[in-house]
Image (cartoon, rainbow, N blue to C red; front, side):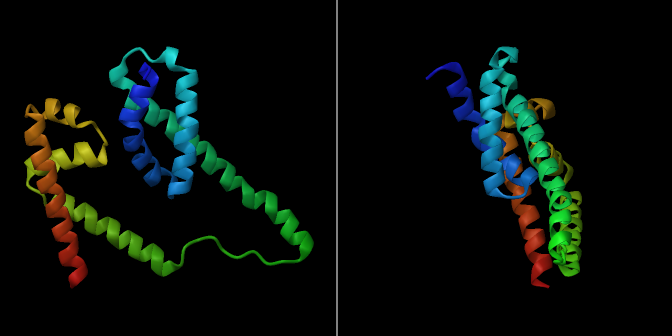
Length: 170
Protein backbone atom coordinates (compact mmCIF):
# COMPACT_ATOMS: atom_id res chain seq x y z
CA UNK A 1 0.00 0.00 0.00
CA UNK A 2 1.42 3.40 -0.94
CA UNK A 3 1.45 6.49 1.30
CA UNK A 4 -1.80 7.91 -0.07
CA UNK A 5 -3.70 4.63 0.25
CA UNK A 6 -2.53 4.22 3.82
CA UNK A 7 -3.64 7.74 4.76
CA UNK A 8 -6.93 7.43 2.87
CA UNK A 9 -7.84 4.14 4.55
CA UNK A 10 -6.90 5.54 7.94
CA UNK A 11 -8.97 8.75 7.68
CA UNK A 12 -11.79 8.21 5.15
CA UNK A 13 -14.36 7.00 7.69
CA UNK A 14 -13.87 10.02 9.93
CA UNK A 15 -14.19 12.45 7.02
CA UNK A 16 -17.22 10.51 5.70
CA UNK A 17 -19.01 10.98 9.05
CA UNK A 18 -18.27 14.71 8.90
CA UNK A 19 -19.65 14.86 5.37
CA UNK A 20 -22.89 13.12 6.36
CA UNK A 21 -23.49 16.02 8.74
CA UNK A 22 -22.30 18.66 6.27
CA UNK A 23 -24.09 17.31 3.20
CA UNK A 24 -27.21 16.13 4.95
CA UNK A 25 -27.38 12.61 3.54
CA UNK A 26 -25.23 9.53 2.99
CA UNK A 27 -25.44 9.51 -0.81
CA UNK A 28 -24.07 13.05 -1.18
CA UNK A 29 -21.48 12.33 1.53
CA UNK A 30 -20.22 9.30 -0.42
CA UNK A 31 -19.99 11.31 -3.66
CA UNK A 32 -18.24 14.16 -1.87
CA UNK A 33 -15.74 11.82 -0.20
CA UNK A 34 -14.88 10.17 -3.52
CA UNK A 35 -14.37 13.56 -5.19
CA UNK A 36 -12.32 14.79 -2.23
CA UNK A 37 -10.09 11.69 -2.27
CA UNK A 38 -9.51 12.15 -6.00
CA UNK A 39 -8.59 15.82 -5.53
CA UNK A 40 -6.36 14.95 -2.57
CA UNK A 41 -4.58 12.31 -4.64
CA UNK A 42 -4.09 14.75 -7.51
CA UNK A 43 -2.62 17.35 -5.14
CA UNK A 44 -0.81 15.09 -2.69
CA UNK A 45 2.42 16.96 -3.42
CA UNK A 46 0.93 19.97 -1.59
CA UNK A 47 0.63 18.01 1.66
CA UNK A 48 3.71 18.74 3.76
CA UNK A 49 2.91 16.63 6.82
CA UNK A 50 1.11 13.27 6.90
CA UNK A 51 -0.27 14.25 10.35
CA UNK A 52 -2.30 16.96 8.64
CA UNK A 53 -3.92 14.60 6.11
CA UNK A 54 -7.29 14.21 7.86
CA UNK A 55 -7.96 17.95 8.37
CA UNK A 56 -6.65 18.61 4.85
CA UNK A 57 -8.94 15.96 3.35
CA UNK A 58 -11.87 17.24 5.43
CA UNK A 59 -11.27 20.77 4.15
CA UNK A 60 -11.24 19.55 0.56
CA UNK A 61 -14.42 17.56 1.21
CA UNK A 62 -16.18 20.58 2.75
CA UNK A 63 -15.36 22.62 -0.34
CA UNK A 64 -16.71 19.88 -2.60
CA UNK A 65 -19.85 19.69 -0.45
CA UNK A 66 -20.33 23.47 -0.64
CA UNK A 67 -19.96 23.32 -4.43
CA UNK A 68 -22.55 20.56 -4.55
CA UNK A 69 -24.92 22.59 -2.35
CA UNK A 70 -24.42 25.66 -4.56
CA UNK A 71 -25.31 23.63 -7.67
CA UNK A 72 -28.36 22.22 -5.89
CA UNK A 73 -29.38 25.73 -4.82
CA UNK A 74 -29.32 26.90 -8.44
CA UNK A 75 -31.48 24.04 -9.71
CA UNK A 76 -34.81 25.58 -8.63
CA UNK A 77 -33.95 28.80 -10.46
CA UNK A 78 -33.22 26.86 -13.63
CA UNK A 79 -36.37 24.76 -13.27
CA UNK A 80 -38.60 27.73 -12.41
CA UNK A 81 -38.87 29.01 -15.95
CA UNK A 82 -39.66 25.52 -17.23
CA UNK A 83 -42.40 25.08 -14.61
CA UNK A 84 -43.90 28.48 -15.43
CA UNK A 85 -43.91 27.65 -19.14
CA UNK A 86 -45.78 24.43 -18.38
CA UNK A 87 -48.22 26.27 -16.08
CA UNK A 88 -47.38 24.08 -13.07
CA UNK A 89 -47.25 25.24 -9.46
CA UNK A 90 -44.11 24.84 -7.43
CA UNK A 91 -44.31 23.00 -4.12
CA UNK A 92 -42.29 24.33 -1.21
CA UNK A 93 -39.08 22.41 -0.46
CA UNK A 94 -38.98 23.82 3.08
CA UNK A 95 -39.60 21.33 5.87
CA UNK A 96 -42.96 21.61 7.56
CA UNK A 97 -43.10 24.18 10.36
CA UNK A 98 -43.53 21.36 12.89
CA UNK A 99 -40.28 19.78 11.71
CA UNK A 100 -38.46 23.12 11.95
CA UNK A 101 -39.75 23.70 15.48
CA UNK A 102 -38.78 20.19 16.57
CA UNK A 103 -35.29 20.58 15.06
CA UNK A 104 -34.84 23.84 16.99
CA UNK A 105 -36.02 22.16 20.19
CA UNK A 106 -33.61 19.26 19.65
CA UNK A 107 -30.72 21.65 19.09
CA UNK A 108 -31.55 23.59 22.25
CA UNK A 109 -31.82 20.37 24.27
CA UNK A 110 -28.46 19.17 22.99
CA UNK A 111 -26.79 22.50 23.77
CA UNK A 112 -28.27 22.44 27.29
CA UNK A 113 -27.15 18.83 27.84
CA UNK A 114 -23.59 19.73 26.81
CA UNK A 115 -23.64 22.89 28.95
CA UNK A 116 -24.61 20.87 32.02
CA UNK A 117 -21.73 18.41 31.68
CA UNK A 118 -19.03 18.68 34.37
CA UNK A 119 -16.20 20.81 32.93
CA UNK A 120 -13.71 17.95 32.49
CA UNK A 121 -16.24 16.06 30.34
CA UNK A 122 -17.59 19.13 28.56
CA UNK A 123 -14.10 20.14 27.39
CA UNK A 124 -13.42 16.71 25.90
CA UNK A 125 -16.89 16.50 24.33
CA UNK A 126 -16.67 19.96 22.75
CA UNK A 127 -13.15 19.49 21.39
CA UNK A 128 -13.68 15.95 20.10
CA UNK A 129 -17.31 15.86 18.94
CA UNK A 130 -18.17 19.47 18.21
CA UNK A 131 -14.84 20.79 16.95
CA UNK A 132 -13.94 17.36 15.50
CA UNK A 133 -10.34 17.41 16.70
CA UNK A 134 -8.43 14.14 16.79
CA UNK A 135 -8.26 12.19 20.03
CA UNK A 136 -4.52 12.67 20.22
CA UNK A 137 -4.86 16.42 19.78
CA UNK A 138 -7.55 16.66 22.47
CA UNK A 139 -5.51 14.59 24.93
CA UNK A 140 -2.39 16.65 24.28
CA UNK A 141 -4.28 19.94 24.53
CA UNK A 142 -5.84 18.96 27.86
CA UNK A 143 -2.63 17.43 29.20
CA UNK A 144 -4.16 13.99 29.75
CA UNK A 145 -3.47 10.53 28.38
CA UNK A 146 -5.30 9.27 25.31
CA UNK A 147 -6.95 6.60 27.47
CA UNK A 148 -8.21 9.25 29.91
CA UNK A 149 -9.52 11.32 27.00
CA UNK A 150 -11.38 8.30 25.60
CA UNK A 151 -12.84 7.48 29.01
CA UNK A 152 -14.03 11.05 29.55
CA UNK A 153 -15.48 11.22 26.04
CA UNK A 154 -17.35 7.94 26.58
CA UNK A 155 -18.78 9.23 29.88
CA UNK A 156 -19.67 12.61 28.36
CA UNK A 157 -21.52 10.97 25.47
CA UNK A 158 -23.38 8.71 27.90
CA UNK A 159 -24.39 11.71 30.04
CA UNK A 160 -25.60 13.64 26.99
CA UNK A 161 -27.55 10.60 25.77
CA UNK A 162 -29.09 10.08 29.21
CA UNK A 163 -30.08 13.74 29.45
CA UNK A 164 -31.70 13.67 26.01
CA UNK A 165 -33.47 10.38 26.78
CA UNK A 166 -34.85 11.92 29.97
CA UNK A 167 -36.15 14.93 28.04
CA UNK A 168 -37.85 12.81 25.39
CA UNK A 169 -39.44 10.51 27.96
CA UNK A 170 -41.30 13.46 29.50
